Amino acid sequence: MGELDSFEILPDHAVAPPGATGVPRSTWQRTKRAARWHRPYAAMLVLLDTGAAALASTVARKLPLADSGFQNNPQLFALVSFVLLPAVWLLALWGHGAYDRRYLGTGTDEFKRVVRASWTVVAIVAFAAFAFKIDASRFACGAALVCGLVNVLILRYIARRALAFARTRFHLATHRMLLIGTLQEALEVHATIARDPAAGLVPVGIHLTEGYAPRASTVTPVPVHAGRDILSLVRELNADTIAVCGSASAEPVELRRLAWQLEGTGIDLAVAPQLTDIAGPRVHIRPIEGIPLLYVEEPKLSGVGWLFKNVIDRVLALLSLLIVLPFFPLVALAIKLSDPGPIFFRQTRIGREGRTFRVWKLRTMYVDAEERLATLHDQNESDGLLFKIKNDPRIFRVGKWLRATSIDELPQLINVLVGEMSLVGPRPLPAEDGDFLGDVRRRLLVRPGITGLWQVSGRSDLSWDDAVRLDLYYVDNWSLVLDLHTLWRTIGVVMFRKGAY
Image 1 (cartoon, one colour):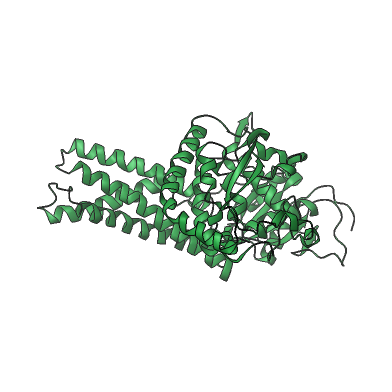
Image 2 (tube, rainbow, N blue to C red):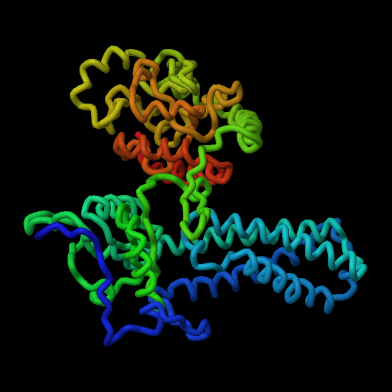
């Protein structure tokens, strides 16, 4: 097939909806979106949020110090707890966009908006108590608001997991997406989307804007088209989303015409620029004389947030050490009975800015493991700097259990406590592999971590390239929310022993 200079939207006048030609439509004549999964999902969230607020009031009333004027007036308590407070919660959540379909199902924006809505509820309750001189226990009110926030977050997380299960197992609540761009750009976007099936994005076709169409013998994950009318192709593929990829997004005239063409169709239009692995908080759009300029901020690896990270690391590391210390004698005995030798294994690793340190681990291998390594190099199953074998003969039986449960990593809490490591970050690489070049060196901008995106996304099952990509994503897009989310995901990974060997 010949080379195409650019893509053009060919109007289908017979079925063109109002507004498809750029003629303004009445805002009251809104077309239903092709993907409508978010409506029953949002309705379910409304019920869950209502129940969360009502449950919070009930729990707060049962607390020992929750004496208030409501105790002797059950009708007033029922009105406030089961009508007024849930209504305030729902209005605050709606006002902060917590039911907006753009933030449901993926990412952390939904939970951020829930937290912001909770501050609005606090302000409303405080103002109402002051204005109407309500005789209510401050402790009870505070407990109800905190409990309400926790309940809403937990129930929404459960709903999110149920949605992800429905998407990955039954292919429900998904968006069927048509990719527009060159073949290489479209395939890159397809590969990125395919890594996260829980996001609900399902590419169903590629429409080429330029370049050569693949040969008949070329295998592509989805059908490839060229020179087709976009709307006709969307209807043929039963798609509900169009994603303009890479250089195709740099064609302002065609992109604007495409947006006009989609008005009134219920089809979503997304733009996937060539800025890969850069999260939303670093990207800002600033319109200058009608031109939307996309600004990419530098990663924030300092400041108040970074200070909080350091404090949280040390506090949680100290508390965790106090909790696990009583069990260390039992683990030490099991190691000694499995193989005489030291209990701990210490190795020189590369830390932040290239500084070396000695990492602490519980020993899981026989004492002659280093000598036996030379005979196993040809069995290495890793494609990167690290040596990995699923059934490594150098690991004794108790050591396999320690690795599967990640208990062997717990002594690294000492490294966190002294500031050599962090709870969340890229895994530290051995010192002999520290003289690496290229993008991998960017991992050294932050302290290495006990857990990280690499660990919660597959651990040893990931390729080296995927592991590096996740580590660099963490460095470029670090935030406290990302750390907390990674710690939460670590619990599930450890419990189900995913990719641990």
